[in-house]
Image (cartoon, rainbow, N blue to C red):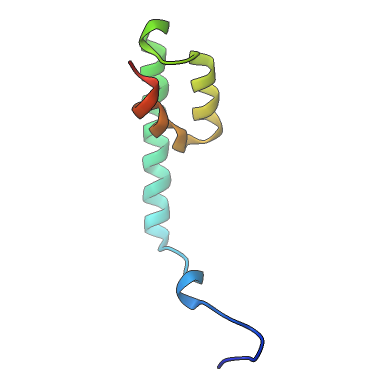
Length: 74
């Protein structure tokens, strides 16, 4: 039922299935773990930027591990 003066967008308000959320969170955690391991094994010359900065960025947001894989490695 439509109420005057109120716009609803049900297609925008849907939540993703729990399985999708769990899979994305798990993938981010695994990617971050591998990024931490890779970062620990590389020398400073093999990493673009300070290693400490990458550790902080990955720790704050595991999604930043993608940035490390794409931009942080030489």
